[in-house]
Length: 239
Image 1 (tube, one colour):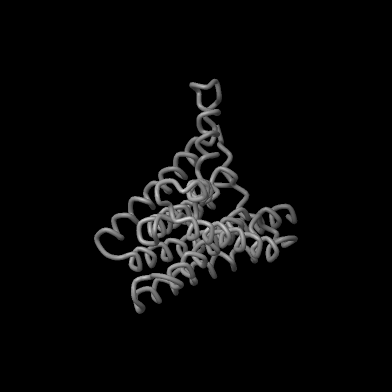
Image 2 (cartoon, rainbow, N blue to C red; image 1 turned 120 degrees about the vertical axis):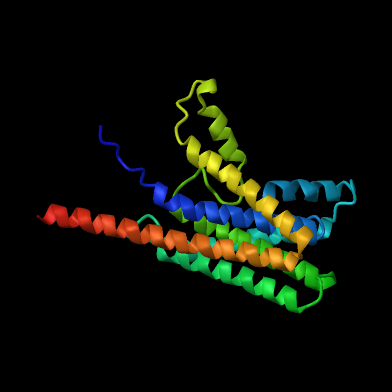
């Protein structure tokens, strides 16, 4: 029996790479930038709440800046991609933003290596820019139109995995991508934490930027393959 290829499959590699990058960046921001999440805004919203309550010595200002930076990046990206179209599922504007985000993260890592460890205004500025970059990535990655792999959060992915599992009476459909997204995030966090512990936050951030660049490149390749398939189909129709 002939099995129809999954049209999402070629895009998943790039999204998984971006998810690994998010795990690395969040490990850097939490472990090296004073307990701040710059990609996982669910945790960050909670930290803001903890800070407002004065609990656990949570740095309120840092977390509030990260939240604001993420929102600003997402709004900017939304303005830039709104209404964009392409014959494939992924418009060029999304790829440009993902590539630019990867370049920005790499430049931040280099700047961190050259400058002293972040403190004061430098720390807050780095936090804000990192969070903005992650907000941009979150919006740009949505162009791949795979809701289970958002690259910045896995809570809804876990819910869908549980809801659609055979244990819950579901079919287990799309379990592979859901497990892949969760493992990618976990692997990124573990890798980032290991790099921060054995090296530095700057070195870990550079690795995160490399994964972002790989993700953008993989999505570019996936789009080119989709274009080739569409060209072949159109050629067959013409015959």
